[in-house]
Length: 401
Image 1 (cartoon, rainbow, N blue to C red):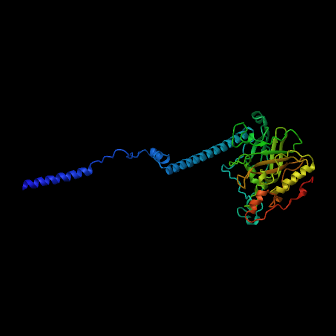
Image 2 (image 1 turned 30 degrees about the vertical axis):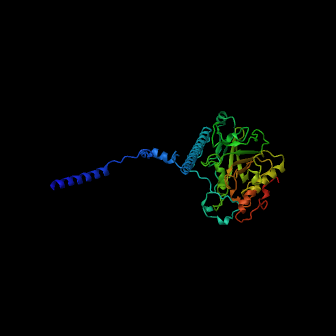
Image 3 (image 1 turned 180 degrees about the vertical axis):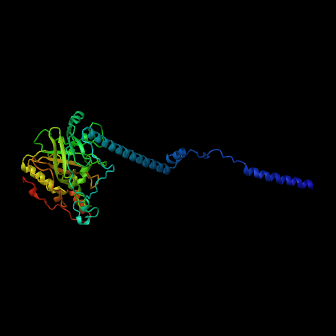
C-alpha cells in the first residue's frame, strides 16, 4: 500500500514537473514564412517605415512614395530659401563694400529693415483709414538735408568700365553705383564685379546715351530687396493710406541725387509715382522704359500728362520742356506675383539757379489715378464701380503746355 502511494506520488510529481517544463521551455519558431525580428536600430526602422519595401501592399507603396515626394519638396523649399537669403546677404555685403571703397559709405540704418506697409487700392476712401495707425502730427515731415555724394569714380571705372553714375536718396539705403551695358538683362542677375547674383545691381537702360545732352531722361532699374538694399526704398513712396499722412515718406525725402564722372552732383525733385502694367493681356502698357529723349515741346508735354494722369500723388514741382528727368523703376506686386507690375518714381533735375528745396506741405494724395483694365476688374469684383474719370491734376504746373 505504501509502495502504491509512493509510485502514485512519484508519477504525479513527474507529471507536474513535465507540465512546468513544457510551459517554461522556449518555443521554437516554425520553419518558413516566419517574420524576421524587428531591428533595434532606429534608423533602419525609420527607413523601413518610409521607403517602399517589396512586401508592402500597392496602397502602402503609394503612400510612402507620396511621403517621399512631399519630403523632397520640403527639402528643396528650404534649400531655395537658404540660397535666396544667402544671396541677399551677399548682395548687401557687396553693395556696402562698393560704397565704402567709393567713398560713399552706407548710412547707419536699422538691421531689421521692414518693407513699407501700403494699401494697394489707390481709390480707397481715406476716411476709412485716416488715423488708424499714426496721426500726422506724430510723424516728422521735415525734409532731409542732401549732402554731396563725392564718389570715387577713378576706383569705380577702374573696377568696372560700365560705371555711369552714383544714385542716392539721403537717409536711406538707396546709395548705389549705376552701371550700363548693351542690354537690360545682364545686370538683373550680375553684381558690380560681374559675379552672378540674385540681387543684381542698379543699372541704366541701354537706350540712354550718357554723353548726349539731348538724352533727357535717365531710366534706372533696381531690385526691390527684402533687405532694404538697392531700390527697396523706392517702394516707400507708395502712399500708405493707413497713416493720417499717406505721403509721409515723400514729404521727408522729396529729392534724389545723381552724380556722374563728368557732370558733377545734381539734385532731382520727385514729382510723380505710378504703378505700371507690363503685360498687354492685363490692359494698357504705359511705355516709360523707352522714352529717353523728346522731339519737341508737344512730345514732352504729352509724356508728362501721361505720367501725371497715373500718379498716385501730386507735388508742387513744376516742369517744362528742356528739363532733365530721372526715372527709378522697381518691382511691385499688389495684385499678386502673377501680375507683373512696377512702381516707378519720376523726378526732374534742379535747374541752374533754382533752389533745390521743395515745399512738401502742399503735396496731395491722388485717389483717382489712371489704372489699367485688370486693376479695375479687381476693384469692381466686390461690387465697386471704379473707372478713370479723367485728368484731375493742375496743368499749370506744366509750364510748357
